[in-house]
Image 1 (tube, rainbow, N blue to C red):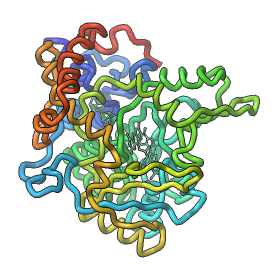
Image 2 (image 1 turned 90 degrees about the vertical axis):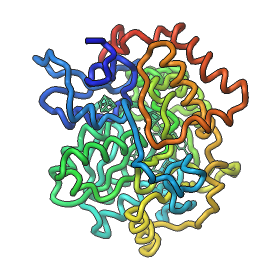
Image 3 (image 1 turned 120 degrees about the vertical axis):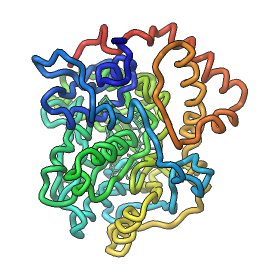
Length: 414
Ligand SMILES: Cc1cc2nc3c(=O)[nH]c(=O)nc-3n(C[C@H](O)[C@H](O)[C@H](O)COP(=O)(O)OP(=O)(O)OC[C@H]3O[C@@H](n4cnc5c(N)ncnc54)[C@H](O)[C@@H]3O)c2cc1C
Ligand code: SF4
Ligand code: SF4
């Protein structure tokens, strides 16, 4: 069997198509566990004693291998479906000023999840937070109180696998909110299609916009750039405490250091996992509501945070309207054009995907399969230079970085 067969989880990982979502580890708990590979991301590894490849449900649910919208779903969608299904666009913020300050943007994801629990839509929220035992890494928990939900506010620009703990949702006594990046949400939806009890338990999905997941090594390097020893770090925050806030660390000695969000992201982004470069969904097209930054205008100095909210389903509308009605959120509806104006770099990245896939296939590297998601026309609209970069530049990168080699061949597992 080829090391790059996409019919097994190991083949998907070898082919560098794993996003690290964790769905396969949830679906095959007796075979796989998620582990952090510092220079790569979180990956499913066989548990001790398992020597055969994992096929079946996990492969079917895997968002790294394939993504698709049902035929016809995007026929009448705005932007000819290029940004997924959209029922409305809002600029919102949490009415709790502490949460608004702490959150990545306007604290809206946390406010919506907390409101869902408060109003009885859900019994808990599956969320990522900083690990309590290893501050440079993340963990997934089912938070059942508004206090715990709010404590998990803030983006973690580091590997996280929310779907590995979908068991917590499946076993919960009632419906739950699931929070994740676009690939996490797509995986949760696909896993729910395989497990009826999970399907019943997913009340609503909240997706966060995502330009890519940097490795743990990227966080270590950012900390070292601050002149701090990573071994001494007790807390890492990637942004928040202001909009967009700063990358901040605290140490065992009680020292603090920080750098601007822009400087931190500029370094982190250089170490994104490969699959993110061929990601067709940076804005949570499979979520009920997806949330990002409304960067269609410059942020004023000291301005309180705001989030951009894309309403994608009727389930999402129920939660959003309830959050407005109960005063958990404040905000305004926006013209849809503000979405593309807010995220020009995500639009360009999405445009390059068709060319990058072409280069992968031409270089005999397995590529992810996408159905019902516009690709060619986005690429065609790119300037000539960007088109060449997405094809020839990618082919060059495949050779120079030796990307046809299995991803974990020489990487140390943390
Ligand atoms: C890797 C990454 C890349 C991003 N790229 C962009 C981008 O290009 N453009 C953009 O507009 N926004 C991006 N975001 C989203 C943005 O940083 C904010 O999360 C978003 O605007 C929501 O802010 P908020 O204040 O409403 O959410 P908050 O109230 O702060 O809540 C954030 C929620 O996200 C969850 N979360 C945090 N990190 C992760 C993670 N790594 N995986 C899964 N769940 C997580 C938390 O558990 C929390 O529930 C990115 C986020 C991440 C994690
Ligand atoms: S993307 Fe998710 S489901 Fe696919 S191999 Fe990686 S962890 Fe497993
Ligand atoms: S860029 Fe796409 S594949 Fe990468 S972490 Fe974000 S949503 Fe997942």
